[in-house]
Length: 272
Image (cartoon, rainbow, N blue to C red; front, side, top):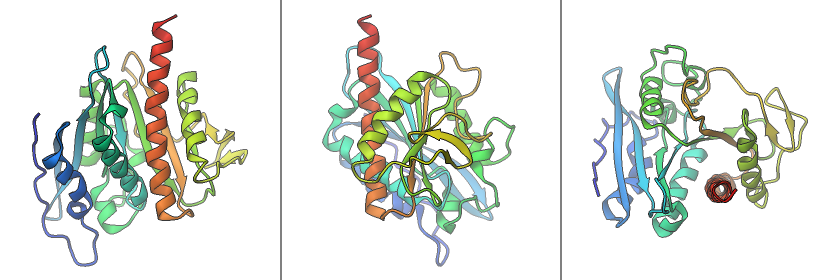
């Protein structure tokens, strides 16, 4: 097991949330756990402050085949802290039940927009919506670090977690292959036991059916277009109008459902 501690960030400015405090439970898990976890950090400077984009890699038990690599991303909008807490809760679940990640290597990116999280803003401190910058030759350091990760790791799947200030229910984006929709549906089914599904015909400006959108915004975090084979790509959204506890819970529940369903799909495909 390789364990690399995160470098402590500079002291947080007055009235700003601390990324180090937020990540303390994950860092403690890395130090104490008997399962295989390691970390990596992207660094950049912002007005004299060293900022970090952390990554935690969790390797589950061997499942008989080569491990599937899945990237899970949260907090790309800084005003969606429940997505981060949901991913942290899921990581705690993995520590208790590593069998849930059997056959997987999970790359967890809990705070994709550290300055936005500190300031409580959707955009980064430079006023940029990072989730409109991908694969556009962006100069934003967070985007450059994440693009490098997306290019170098060859993920089999990507899951992005978001909060929606306008929706009243859970929903998700599953553009592209039928597989994406088949993985999102069980996640929504599991999540709606906690928060109802958004059944609106139009969500976020796009046509929706049963809480599933097949089109989305340009420049969002996704795999590079040249990557083959294409990974599955899911965006899961929870309503910010729901309680903090409910939002955190549905993110963790949805992640578990997607991973379980993907393993079922692979087992079925292997037997065809």
